[in-house]
Every structure is written in C-alpha cells, then in structure tokens.
Image (cartoon, rainbow, N blue to C red):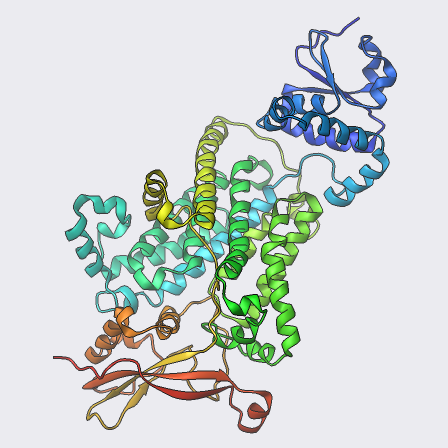
Length: 612
C-alpha cells in the first residue's frame, strides 16, 4: 500500500551519521515543503522500491508514487527552496548530471570517511547553524564603531568644516546649490540642506553618539542604525577631504546593510528575535571579501615594483600615515622577515579571503586569521576605526554554536523560531533589497577590475551615478602602490620674514626624539591629510592654502587642531610650508641619541603667503 502523503517524502538511512547530518541541514532549508523519514521506519510502506535500495541512496517520493534517487533526488528536494540552480544544471548542462551521480556514488560508498570529513569541516552540531547571537555581537561592534566615528569627528568638526574652519560646510552647500538647483538633493543627500550652522552639525554628531549607545544596548537597533547611517552620510557628503577615507565608505556600506540585519522591535529579546536574513549575511560576507581580496588584487594589478619584488614592507612601517612605536621595532627586523611578511599579506588577502564563504571550521579558521591580521595592523599603524570595523565583519563568520562556548552563561540560550506579520514583511523587503544590492555589488566590483573605464556602458555609468551619492556600494583597495619615502610638511610663521616659528601638530611626526604613538581609533583628520598633501604639491591641495589662511586669520577652532600656537598674542604676518624627508633611525642611533626619526630638509612646499 502506498501512503498518500500530500508532500514529497525524502527517505534516508537513519543509522547513517552522514545522512542524518545532512538531512537535518536540508530540513531547515526546505522547512515544511518536504517530509523526512528514516528508511528503517517506513521502507515497507513504499513497495515500489526494494527495501535494500534505501541503504545505498536517498529517495524523494511524490504523492503519486513517482520518485527520484541519488543526486537528482537531493536537487529536487532543494529545488523547493531558493536553491534551484543545481537542478537546472543537472537537467540542462551537459555532463553535470553524470558528474553529480558519480560524486554521489563515491560519497555513498565511502560514507564512513565522508562522515568524518564532514564533522571535521562542519563540526559536530546537527542542523543548520543559527546567527542570532552572532548578529547581536556584530550590532554591538557596529554601534561601537559609529560611537567612535561620531565622537572622533565631532571633536574636530568646527576646525575642519565649521564656519571658521578649513573647509566650511556652509560654503560647499552654497556652491552646490548655485550649480545644481533642486537636483542637489539627490546628487548631494545630506540633512544639512535644512540647516548648516555649527550648532546643528555638532548636534548631529552628539545625537549620533547617543544613538550609538542605544544600538550597543540593543534598543531600537533597526531604526537606530537607519538614523546613524543617515547622520554619517550627511556628514560624509559635506566633509570633503576630511571624510573621504575608505573606512568612511566602508562604515556607510556596512551600516546600511546592518539596518536590514537588525531586529525591527524597539527592545528585542535575544531568545525570540527572528533569525537574520541569509541574504544580508551573504552581502556582509561579500563585503568583507571585497575589502580583503581587492586590497591584495590592487597590489599586483598596479605593477608596483615593491610588491612584485616583495620589498614593500621594507618601507611600509616608516612611510605609512601615522606609525606606532611598535612599527619602529618591526621596521628593524631582517629583510628576509619583511619579504616573507609580504608573501603572508598577499596569501591572506588573495587566498584566505575565499574561505570566508567556506563551511563551518574552514570559515572559523578564515575569521581567526583575518582577525589576527587586523590586530597586527593595529599594533603597527593607526587606522582609525578600520580594524574594529573589519573585525566586526569577521564576527559574522562565527555562528552561535561556537560563540555560545565563549560567552557568559546567561547568553547561552536556545533560540525560538518566531514568525509574525512584521517579520514576513521585513523578509520580503530584505529579499528584494538584498538581491538588488547583490547584483549592484557584483557589477560595481567586477566590472572595474576587468574593464577599462573608457569602455563602460551608458547603463553601467547610470547605475554608478545613481548609487554613488548614497555610498551603499563602494570600491576598496588599500596600498596599491607603496610609498618609499616620507616627505613631511611643516607650517612656519613669521612677523618679519627673518625669524620663523613652527606650528606643531598633535600626532604626525615632528620632534626627532618623540616616539610614534597610538592614537587609533581616534583619527586626527588634519594630520592624515597632511600626509597625503606631502605626496604631491600645493596646487593639487587647495585645502592646504585655506588651512594656512585660517592660521593667518588666527581661527581659534583651526588652532585647536594643532599641538601648539607659536603666536599666542597675534597671528603671524607671513606663513609658508616647507618639506623635510623623514626616516626611522636604526637601533644604534636610537641608543646613542634617543631619536626615533632622522630628517633631511628638502625645500619649500609653498611660497611665502600673507593676507592682503
């Protein structure tokens, strides 16, 4: 007698650990669209199939008695979900079906070995992994990064983009309004079209910091993350040179995706939160992959000789924007170590990054290596909140089964499956948005890698121009070309043109006996821009002339960005910028003189300036 099930039934060997492991995984994917039963209990109910056949393959049996076995049976079951590609390839791609059945037979005949291999790669936890606890840690990380970003920029904002700052936001907005009219609202989306006073800009930074604390505490995470993204985007679009770093765009892209990952409730409870969207998890992992892999790709694609001959790290530690004293010591290590380190960097960025998409323990290993890599970077250089943000993305590679082992007991809870109208509505929205962003990410990531900009199609250019103002999909790639020297700009003032006094910066190299220090996760934006300016000329850095004009005017907010004011009573009459070439000292010089740096005067960077 054939049992008339209303749904297809997948029969498997209930005594096989390998079969049981994968059936539990498939159950989470197919949910109630497929019924799973062990052959030991129901084999006799299906007389059209000899009982011994169930010991060598799975069978997917339909209500009408028809069935499929082996690889095709698996693909048919998975086709009831979003995973329809394997079945399509089985039926349409020549040779794919035969290869699939051969692979299935190989596994079926060696289940003991593959059972051990499966548990070595995926671990011993049956069923599909959950990500509720992972999401909670990730949201704490994002909240922390936003808190750092708003606090750090807010402490400098009046001197950078305030009314009396170097690049006033009000002046930018007035220029854009005159050129673009109403189109400006889309081309330059920012809340500061409403009000661009210093008080309102500072209020946005303060509000961003306060909302960050709420997100960290798990209060209104989705809405809070939306506000944080909106606030930071508003600052980004008026920050000009001071908010154009890759970690700023990385925060905006990560923060935008985090909105759709977070629970919608105002005070969600960890045990009853709906599971995170698989689409958003995939997008965040793809984002991490893009950051890591592209940073390795651009090093090779640039043709830079220092990466090709593995000498890049002979220069990196002393020529990076803001080194640390640990970087000085690492710089002293033998050349063979530095060359080996270049290979390690390329292997991690170009190789380990692919394991981000791996299963279980392979993914854990990739996350561990990438986190360790970020910690090493943070020890030798100051890169703002970049390292913390990247580590937060790496946390998404650990599922709950692993995190439960390292968190306090009160967090070791069993998550309950919850469904609600809000959850279903959000799921559909996330599906549409996620697929759209994924397609855009693929296009905007791979096309620039392989196609010259002169060959871009009008459609691609239109997509880029539409998305770019909102910074939800961006391009990455750090240190494509290694700087092999370290020019340092110094600003000097004078009242008579004879005696010149130097303005000292808070963090960038200056005094030879002053050790490079740790400043991250705070980013002194002016000090950073001085590093970039030194790599070219003042004609390409008009902001630097505006900075010098502010010093001639004696702007108190700009002077607050510096370590000292050599003209405390009145601003100088004349001002100029000069350049020195800086190098780390060796251990002998440091022991004898106590100097961390040595320098050589290179000449004037700007002509002597004075106010009219």
